[in-house]
Amino acid sequence: MSLINKPAPTFSAPAVINGEEIVENFSLEQYKGKKHVVFFFYPKDFTFVCPTEILAFQEKLAEFEKRNVAVVGCSTDTEETHLAWLLTPKAEGGIESVTFPMVADVDKTIATNYDVLGGEYYYDEDGKLAFEGAPIALRGTFLIDKEGIIKHAVLNDFPLGRNIDEALRMVEVLQHHEKHGEVCPANWTEGEDAMNATRESVKSYLSSH
Image (cartoon, rainbow, N blue to C red; front, side, top):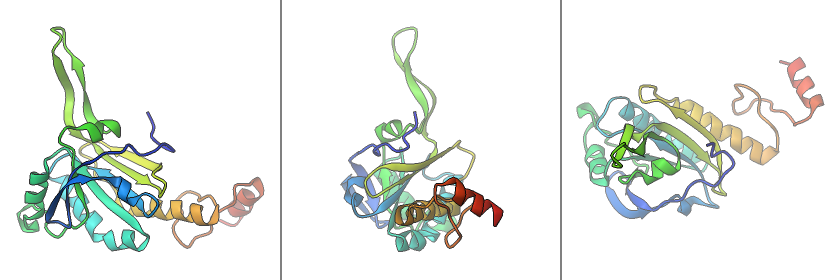
């Protein structure tokens, strides 16, 4: 079920912040009323595609922060594994230098509530609880506004790395709409013309592009 225009599921979970400190009760609620949030899930620590995405988010972090956006990552690994990975140099497959929060969803409830878990639990013919699929998070990305409402979401299968520039572009689209009330056409980027939600505005835009 789509979470668009619904409140982002709340949670309180362990996380690593600033690349070095474990906190026990991290929550996105701290940003409510203050910041937009890009909350993303990735499958596993110490893997292959995941560090490329996480480091790409870090490379763009200043651009997100300039727009008053918090970036937060999450996987089903433990906070201790997160910390070990964060302390491992890039040359050795680590993500050293990453400073945004990394949430540990060990019991998989966060991934389940955001509907990004790569499989599902069921009861087999013997009445025993079983799991079909992969009990880790898919590559889900959620853009949450200052009121805690999900405004954009995209979900990728495990092999398909996401586009961090597109995540930043969607922040710009949302913030432009919030500030000006205009709607943004296909491939819109910051600084380009947008439109009012009227037929006349659309006709004018299309005739000039």
